[in-house]
Length: 440
Image 1 (tube, one colour):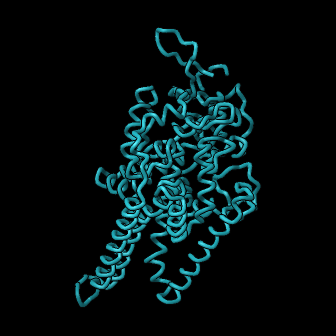
Image 2 (cartoon, helix red, strand yellow):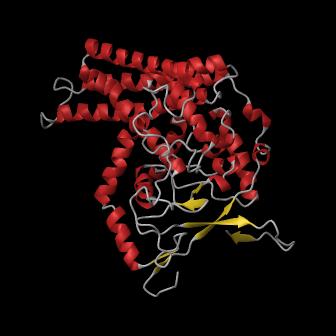
Image 3 (cartoon, one colour):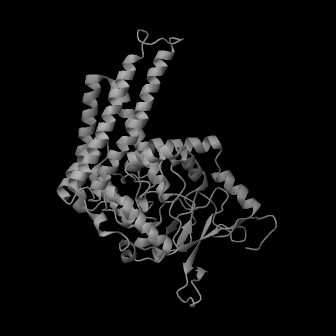
C-alpha cells in the first residue's frame, strides 16, 4: 500500500519461524525425565485431597464460630456476610487445588500418570468424571490438539476467528497491510466499530468466557475447529466428526461417567440440600472450570503467538506455538508460587508439555529448563508470556480479535487491524558471515 502521513504504522517484532526437528527438541531433555511412577503420581492426588479436606474442615469450624454467642459484631447483618466471605474463600482455594486434580487426570490421558495404560485409563476416568469431564472424549480431542497445535484447520480448540468469520470486509491492500503493520484511519474506524470493546464490555466478555467457555466447548464446539458441522459436533455424541468408529465405546464410557456424576450430585442434593452442595462442591467446580479456561486460553492465545496453515505447519512449530506463564504471578511471588504448586506447573511448563506430553509434572520442571536452554541457544527466545491472571486475560481478550484469511504463518490482529508480530524465515542460503532472515 502507498504510505500516507495519516496512516497508523506500527513497528512489528520479527518472529523467526522455527526449523527444529522433533529429534532436536527431544534430545535436549534428560532421559530420566521420561520416567513415570504410579506411586509418585498417586501421592500428588493424596496431597491435593488432603489440602481440600483441610480447607473444608477449616471453613466448617469457622462457619460454626461466626454467631452471636461466640463473637460480637456491631451489626447483625455482618454475621451472614462473614459466613458468606468464609465460604467464598473456601470456593476459591478449593477450586484452585481441585484444578490440580484436573491436571493429574489430564496427565492420565497423556499416559503420563504411570507406565500402565489400564491404570491411566481407570484413574483418569474416575478423576475426570468426578469433575464433570467426559474423560475419553476429551482425551481424544485433546490428543488431536497436541498433534496439530496452532494449525488453522486441524487444531481442536482456541482456533482463531478469521477476517471473514468476524464479518469484516475483504482486505483492501491499498488501505491496510496484510501483515498488519499499517492501516488507514478509515479502516481503523470501521474495524473499531465492528470489533472494539469498551472496558466493561471486554470484562463481561472475558468473564462469560471464563465461566461458561468450558461447557460451551464440550456441548457446542465453542472456539473449536470451524470446519466441523454445527449441531452434531459435541463431546457426548459418539458419531461426532472428531471421533472415529473405533472411539464409539470409549465415548459411551465417558457418558456413563458423566451420568454417574449427575446421579451423585442429585443424591447429594437430596440428602444434604441444594445450598450445602452448592457451596461445598458447585462453587469450587465453577472455579475449576474458570482456571481451566484461563490457563489454556492464555497458553495458546497472545499477539506473540503464530498460527499456521498446512503449507508451513510442522509438529515442532505447533509445539512451540505456545507460552509458559506463571499462574497468579501478577499478584506477587507468593501467589505465583501457590498458583504453580496448586496446579502442578501446567501453566509454567506448557511448552515442554507440548514437546513431550508423556513426561509427568514432577519431572517437567527439570525437562522444561533443559529444553528452554537449548531453544534460547538456538535463537528461539519468546518462551515466557506475562503472568497468567485476570488482568492478562482482559488484555489478551482485547488484543486478539482475528487473523487474516490469507497467509500460511499468521498472527492475531487487534480491533484496529494491527498486528504486533510478523513472520520471517531462516535463509537456508545464508553466507558464512552469519544467519540471515528473510520475509516470505
